[in-house]
Every structure is written in structure tokens, then in C-alpha cells.
Length: 285
Image 1 (cartoon, one colour):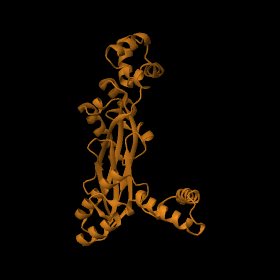
Image 2 (spheres, helix red, strand yellow; image 1 turned 90 degrees about the vertical axis):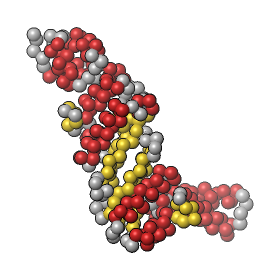
Image 3 (cartoon, rainbow, N blue to C red; image 1 turned 135 degrees about the horizontal axis):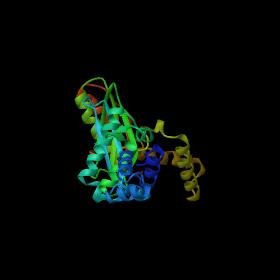
Image 4 (cartoon, rainbow, N blue to C red; image 1 turned 180 degrees about the vertical axis):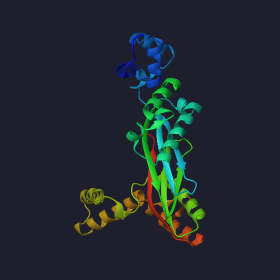
């Protein structure tokens, strides 16, 4: 039998997309004949990954993992081609293993994760093996992580598995109540799509663009020059109530803002709650 070299294994992997160990075994079984090894992998269903690699992966799920003390959380998008596969046990099991790995390494660097040791091989090779086993292209989307050492992280994923949120809440005590508050705010984030925590954290250029739009609109409507700026400022203030989390109406009681809800929850818990950050996660966005 001809000697099997690393370059032969590499060549076979590039031709088929199969895992390194599968390529090595295929070469052993085929007497180091590359073409026979390709056929062996095809017969075993292990050469499908490469053929599927260019297919669009627009479905999938977002999987969350939170630490036992609720101070850390990780969310990972794992994508596939169809919703049918996204709801399958094999795909969900694979996605859970991926988020466990991301959580254990507390990383949101997907490119780095692909080279990590995973399921006895690398993450990249394990994905190729999952593609062969499941029969659809599989990709890692984005990974997200949140941490709050002086409080808790509230995590929420919508029932369709395609929308999720992580919310960091600092607290002076009563972490159980803080966690309930954080989870409710996470549901708010999923439902209302805020882009900033408060007006102070909005890009000034974005606000000025909105202000200019309403200035021009007021001019075209023939409004008096002395009230145009007032009209524009009022429009920007309304805009901030739509895009800023703290100024949004609370989805469970639209008579109060999230800032009001934060004060109420703090008072009831006997501790000071402060939302310090959030992430809204949309599959494929």
C-alpha cells in the first residue's frame, strides 16, 4: 500500500468536505487512491458537506446558555437551510453542544471557535460531519455574550427560536427579583427592537438627521420659522421614545416607561436595579 501523506488527506478533504479522520480512513480503505477514496466517502454519505456548502442557510435557531448564578450568558445562532431541520432533534442537539462550548470558553468569536477542539475534532470539521449526517448546509452565525458581576443577566428567547435578548442589570441586592426584572426587560427588547439604552447613548448624527428631516418637513408645510426648531425637537423626542429602551412604554403596562418600571421594581425589591446594557439577537441579521 502506498504511504498516506498529510497532503493527500488535505487534498481529499478539499475535494469532499469530509472530516480529517474520515479522509484518512477512506485513503486506508482505498489503498491511497484519491478517486477511490472519494467514492468511498460518497458511499458512506460523508462527501456531501462540500456539495452543500454553497447552499443558503437562512433558517436555524438561537440557543441560550446562562450560568447557575445568572451572572453570565451566551447566545449562539446556528443556521441551516430549512425550518424542518431547525426543529429536528439532531440539529437541536448539535446547536446545544455548540452553545455549551461557547459558554465554557465564554467567547463570541465565531472564527476562533471554528478552530477549537470540539466533539473529538475541530468545530469546523464537526460542522462538516453534522452536514453529512443531517443533510443540509449548517453554519455558525453570530455568537453573543453578556456578563454582570455586580448583578444578573436576564436572557429570553422567543418561542420560534429566532429572536432573543440578553439584558445586564446591576443590583445592590435581591438578585432573585433583579433576575425577574431583567427577564421581563429582555422580553421587552425582543418585542420592541430598541437600538439604544437612552437618548444620551444614541449617535448624535442619527438624531441630527431626524431633526433635519422634520425641520424640512415643517418648512414644506409652511410652518412659521420661529416654531420650526420646536417642531423638530418634539419629533426627535418622540423618536427617542420609540428607539430608546429606557423611554419606551413597558409592554405589560403602557402607562409606564421602562425607566418607571425600573424604579417601581427597585422599590418593591428593596434594592437598586440599573439596566446597564442589552443585546437584541435576530437570526441571520
